[in-house]
Length: 209
Ligand SMILES: C[S@@+](CC[C@H](N)C(=O)[O-])C[C@H]1O[C@@H](n2cnc3c(N)ncnc32)[C@H](O)[C@@H]1O
Image (cartoon, rainbow, N blue to C red; front, side, top):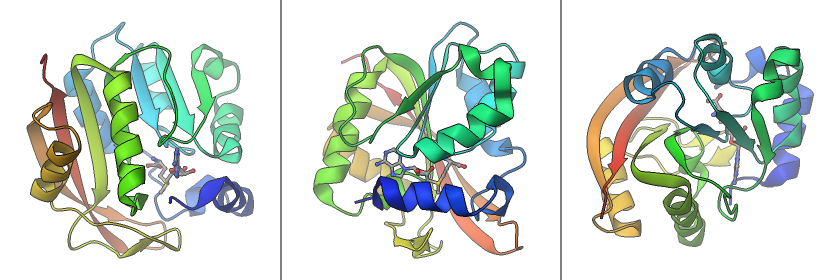
């Protein structure tokens, strides 16, 4: 369980985006990893994007088509309002990633701080089903979670923390032999209040098999 829509709508309704612990004025590491793998014209999706500014930058750099998915309509409304008319070319999807059924495929999937909320095995299996359906063969999945030395909770909810090797093992358990690790980084996020949160960012390629 990832908190449910009401939890997230309340969170985004109660505070401005730059007061949320996960806020990044510029999502630098996500951008570095996305730019390394996304080619102009390739379809991109940000999973559980919240009010993230990642798509603002990608839009400005001419990437697209871009899709932004989140469980919370309130979160999507923050980004849509910020982007205004610039956001009209983006596909905005309000959905639960554990049950969503995509109607197209993507070249790059980006998830920062969503998979770690999936504490139940059936939710991780649902996420894996969606990932499988959404990512084209040879596609790239960038998955950032709290690291093994990171916080035990995020937004007041329990999380599963992963070392990069543990995340790769879990993905292989869910989708055996389908993903190879291309890159894995550790990253210290500093929250708006100055607290340190240890993350890991892993980059996987879906094999052609
Ligand atoms: C910690 S925030 C991270 C937001 C964004 N990725 C970022 O880095 O700024 C987690 C986000 O995941 C969304 N979320 C939680 N559970 C979800 C689910 N089952 N399906 C889709 N989105 C979900 C929340 O609404 C929230 O926006």
